Image (cartoon, helix red, strand yellow):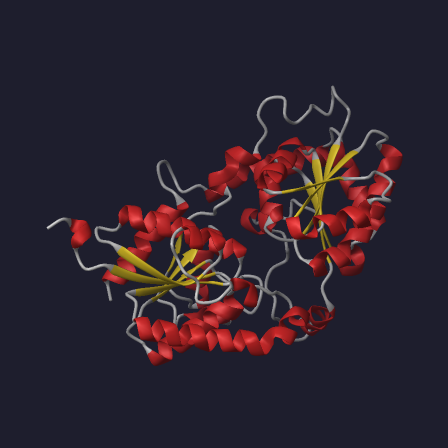
Length: 397
């Protein structure tokens, strides 16, 4: 009998936002390539997983919210979706459940599945930031997660130290896109010979982030314009916020070229000489692209209170909010939090990065070390490594 005619494997994936949907789609492809039998996929996903044949239990837009102020109005619906997902998993009785990122939603699903159907193994794809925030979560995860797929190289050791579930580093998706982020010859002009600097401005992908940072970034650009008369500014924006951003930046001292879509964003990264960015995954993208940066973040009112509480009851455990800094174990990227993110401070930090300088050289040299830290090895892929472990866990049921 042909191997693909054996009893099909049942895999249930739970995704909470677009980035997880992308990982889920890649995992589905890799599972199909590696599995000796047919696989039936069910779960909650977005457009990319739908293109792989997964009919989502409900639209992920119902749960794709971030920040307390955004979650509270939608909390009743989110709670309903948690229980709806758990009911569906128990009914389908899959060989393995894979929860992907979005821990506020996916982990609530996993905990309830473990209580109602403890025989169903759970794989968690992307670790919550236990190394930065609420480290006690690692030990609690061990009760309902059978294996954790980490996308940052230091996370397996962190979970081992904190008593978390068995953890394997499977690579970060950005490393596999490194060639698309890095400039071909001639794409990024030589600052010493050309002299026309290109500044990337990245105020975030959520309305709340943009509201807190865009005005200060614009004021920093105005200060930089005084030194760099021919400054060019490119602002990659998520498509649904492009029009709003274009309107709000029309009066800047240097009117930015607002671009959207993956291709235009990657092209901007390949041209940029320096960046002014919100904290987040984009800082790792910039580092892989070899773009020095200054990073800013303004917390909302709730997390400001938590930050104040942390002085008396430690909840956060890292000294940086910038991923390249955490991975390298060295604060090579300057960062500015809350009131420290003034236009004057940001402009003073970015100015040396837009010209040949020791500050620029130091960041570029540090970013070259990221490859050694994050690479999996010749012939290995992130999705392939993840799929291998998911199949192993499913077989062990």
